[in-house]
Amino acid sequence: MFGRGIELKTTEQIEVMAHAGAVVAEALEAMREVVAPGVTTGDLDALAREVITAHGATSNFLGYGAEPGVPGFPAVVCTSVNDEVVHGIPGSRVLREGDLISIDCGAVVDGWHGDAAITVGVGEVSEEVARLVEVTESALAAGIAAGRLGGRVGDISAAIEASVRSAGSYALTDGFTGHGIGSAMHQAPDVPNTGRAGRGPRIVPGLVLAIEPMVTLGTSRNRTLDDEWTVVTADGSWAAHCEHSVTWTEEGPRILTARR
Image (cartoon, rainbow, N blue to C red):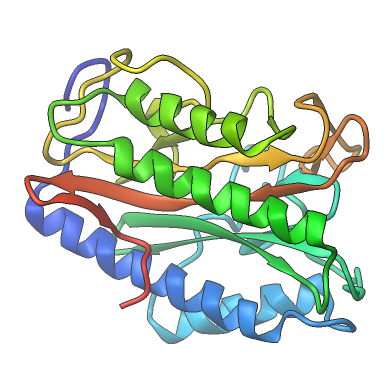
C-alpha cells in the first residue's frame, strides 16, 4: 500500500491486469462492431458474457454492490443510451438510428481487474452527437498524456477539464470520478475530471488508475432513476463516457485496456 490505502502493484500483477484489460478491450470491440439499429442492449450484454467467459475471466460488474437482500448490478456491462450518463442496465431496449450508447465493461483475471468504456453512435448520428464523442475521447487522451511518474493525479484532472472547456459549451458530469483499480475494481485514489495541476496523490510506479471523463451537451447536474443504478442528465441532454485503465513507466503511459 502507498499513502491513504493506495495499492501499488508489482510488475507481475500489472501483467495480469493487462490480461484482464485485453479481455475488456476485446469485449468492447465485439460490441462496437454489432451496435446497429434493431440491436437490444441485452444483446450487447450477452455478447460480452460470451467473450469474458471464452477467455476464462469473470465479470466484475455482475453482482457489484450486492449485500444481504440486495442482489447487486444485474449485468456484465453498463449500457447507457442518449441522456443516460452511466450505469444503464441492459435489457429489452432496442437501439434506434441516431442513438448514442456508452458501454462500460470490466473483467477479472486471477483476482486482478480491468475496466474501460466506449461511446458509439448507432447508425448515422448528428454532427453534434459525433462531436460530443470526439470531445470525450480527446479529454480521455489528454488526461492520460498529462500523467507522468513524479506528477500528481490533479495533473490528469486539470488536463481533462481544460480539454473539455476548450472544446466549447460542454459539461463534465458532477459527482462522478475515475478511480484506482487493482485487486478491486474501485480503489483509492479518486480521479476527478476537474481540478488543479500539482494537487492530489503522486503518480509512482505500480499505481493504476481508471480514467473516465463523462461529458454532456448540457448540464453537469444529474439524477438516478428508480432502478437505483441508471444515472441521467438533469436536463435530458445527451452524454458520452470513455474510460481506460492506465499505469505509468519511465517510458510514459501504458494503457492496460488497449487492444493487443
